Amino acid sequence: MQRPEPQEFARVLSSMCTEPHPAARAAAERYLATNPGDPGTYGAVADLEREAVEMLGAVTRLDDPTGYVTSGGTEANIQAIRIARNRKRDVVDRPNVVVPDHAHFSFTKAADLLSVDIRRAPLDEDYRADPEAMTALVDGDTVGVVAVAGSTEYGRVDPVPALADLAHDSDALLHVDAAWGGFALPFTDHAWDFADAPVDTMTIDPHKLGQAAVPAGGLLARAPALFDTLAVDTPYLESTSQVTLTGTRSGAGVASAVAAMEALWPDGYRAEYERAQDLAEWFADELRDRGYDVVDPTLPLVAVDVPTDTVEALREAGWRLSKTGAGEARVVVMPHVTRGMLRAVLADLDRLG
Ligand SMILES: *Cc1c(COP(=O)(O)O)cnc(C)c1O
Image (cartoon, rainbow, N blue to C red):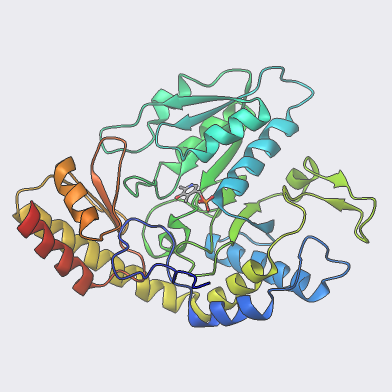
């Protein structure tokens, strides 16, 4: 039977994933039949995972990082909330986590799975977390506070140092979700990483701006002891305990993450960030010149208020475009997004809008 070809990236505008770097593609194939979940048997990929964590530490400025390569940002966020909850298991009955309203829907899954309440605080007028609004929701049962560094809808970066203070004043953990933004932020002047603030845990996904193959997410912790709260015994493996959520895991993801980071950190990621940010700002200007309302791209992500009918017409024309909760079209300027593509979508917009 003839199988369909996978989609091409030529009209993909809203995805946070992209074509893997060629070295990442080759490494994924080479390590396809490995399982970092069983390090006693698959030693080579287990070594590679340690390298991946070291490199993620370099990107996020954390010396001696602890962590692992997850299936994605969702698993990393679930595990971070699990760490925060388990750490206070003996002292808190009805744990809650305080998040800014733009926190990714994976936190809703985490809350449901872990029986933790999620308290969502309204954003400030620039779509960033508002520390005052979050303070109002923190109480003695708060086990964690979340900051987003590169929000899914508008690419905003929350005031991480202020939220770290808020968390620690209540003996809660501060988790930073940099799933998407983590490989762009080192080249900006935002305060977001482990060196900027006493961040406890962080999500950063190689399979988004890191240009690794899917699945390759990342969870890092400042203190190794934080992972102890997740350990379960593993009687039939050579290793004796496991902190990951899934058992068998993708060695392809691990190997591709290492290959991508070796190829691109830091100069390749810097060049890509600069290219994408210039392009996002140019695109935002072009849209404004046409009279559309645009949310300023602080990272390479443009949200634009285009009528629903027009977005539908663009989709019909083959553009892969999604909308924010408020109804703006989102264009994520990933490595596969070129000026030629954006010129073409502008031409279609002029024709259909
Ligand atoms: C994409 C994203 C996630 C979820 O990551 P998956 O890899 O899709 O599971 C979580 N948080 C943020 C900010 C994201 O952009």
